[in-house]
Image 1: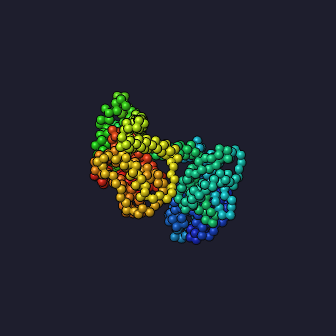
Image 2: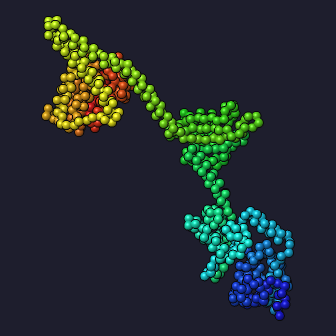
Length: 621
C-alpha cells in the first residue's frame, strides 16, 4: 500500500518507534544492493544510511535519526523540521529528509512514523551552483579527488574525478574499472615511498586527517612528487572508505629542494645570515648557528636586540666596541655612501676569527640604504692559513737574503783557506835555511787547519744537497764513543784560541761502544767545538759525555764561556743559513747539518737555554 506513496521519494521507511525497528519500503539502488530489503533488528537508521548519504560522520544526521529523539519530537507534531545534507553518491547534489506520523497510541504518543529521504535535489539552486563552481575550481587547480574502498576479501577500488585519473596516468575518456584505477595508483609507489604511504593510511584509519608528500612514478612522466590527503571511515563488517585529494607538487618540491640547497650552501658559508630592513630596523633570519648564542635567536625581530647579542655574547671584550660601531644603523649611510659592502674581522669568545659583512640589497631614491644582508663568516681557518703563508713568505725572504749573503761570502769562505794553503806552501818551498824548523811546524799547522776548514765547508754543502734529495748517507757500525770525542777534540784544537782551555771528560769506560755512524757523530761534535772556538776568546770549552743526564740515552755536550746565544735567536739557531754573528767566519750551515744528522741517527740536538755562562749545545742519542 505504500509503494504509490514512495514513488516520488528516493528512500521511504516505516519505523516502529516502540520496538525500534524499521522496514524498507523503497531505497536507493546502491543501498539496497548492499543491505537488501531488510535491516538487522537492532540496526539504527543512522547506521543504515550514514555510509551512503552523508560525506562525514554527520552529527546532525545521527541526532535526527535517533529513535528516542524522534519520539519526543513527534509527541505533538505531525511533521518534523526538514534537514539537508550533502550526498555522498553524487558530487554537487543534496538530499532532504523528514519524518511523518504513521500512528499514535491512546496517549497520543507516536508509535510508528515514516522516515523519508526525498528525491535528490538536482535543481540549479544557489547551493548546487556553488558546489559546481568548487568542482570547476578543483579541476582547474589540477586537484584530484578520490574515493577509495578497502574492503575485506575484496580487491581495492578507487574512484576519482577526471583530474585524478590523469594524475595516475589514465585517460578519463577511456573506460577503466575501479580495480584498474587503484592498481594504476598503487604500482606507481616506489619501494622507498611505501613506508610513508602506509603510515599515512594508518593515521587515516584511526580517524585522523592526514596529508603526505611522497615520490610517485608516472607511467609517462617518470619520477614525480605528489601530495595526498584524506580521511577514512570505518564501515562495520566491511572495511574502510577513504575520501581525499591527490595533486602533483613536483615543481614545488623541486623548488623547495633548490631553496634547501641554497640555504645549505649559505649555511656552509655563513655562521649567521640576516636580511635587515634599515627603515624599520627589523631583521629576518635565514641562517643562524644557535650554538653561538646562550639563547635562541627569533626568526625575525628588532635589529637592536640582535646587535646586542652579537656584541655581548659573541665578540671578545676587546672587539665589542668595534662590532657595535660596525652595526650602528645611524651611521651606515655615511659609511657606505660610495660602497656596496663593508667588512669587519674580530675575535669571538673562543679566540676564533670571524668576519661580519654588510652587503647592500637596495637603496631609496636618495641613495640611502633600504635593505641589506648581514652575514657572519667563520674565517679562523683562513686566518691560520694566511698566518702560515705569511710566516712561510717571511722565512722564504729571510732564506733568500741568507742565501744571497752565503753566496756573497762563499768566495771569501773558500778563498781564505785556499790563500792560506797557497801562501804557506810557498813559504815552505823556500830554500833551506830561509825559515826555521819552528816556523815550518807552524806553517804546516796553518795549512792543515785551512784544509780542514775547506773540507768542512764542502762537506756541509754536499750534505745539504743530499738531504734535499733524500739521499743522506748513514753507515752504522760499532763505535767507541770516547775515542770519537778525543779525536774530535784533537781536530778542533788547531782552531782553539791560545787563551781558551779545551778539554774532555766522560762518565763511560773506554771500552763502551754503540752501533751508530761514528763519522757523523764526529761531524756534529766538530761543528759544536768549532762554533765554540769562534765565539770564545777567553775561558774554557768543555766536551763531556754523559749517561745519566738523559737516562737511557747518551748525551754529548759542548759547553763554552763565550758570548752565548741571544734568547731571540735560540729557537731559530738550527735553521739553515742562521749565523750568530755575520762578521764571524762561517757559512751558517753547520748547526743545520747537525740537526739533519741527529734526525737521521734517531737522536736530537738542542741548545741548553738554562745555561747562562755562554753556550751549551747537546747531541742526544
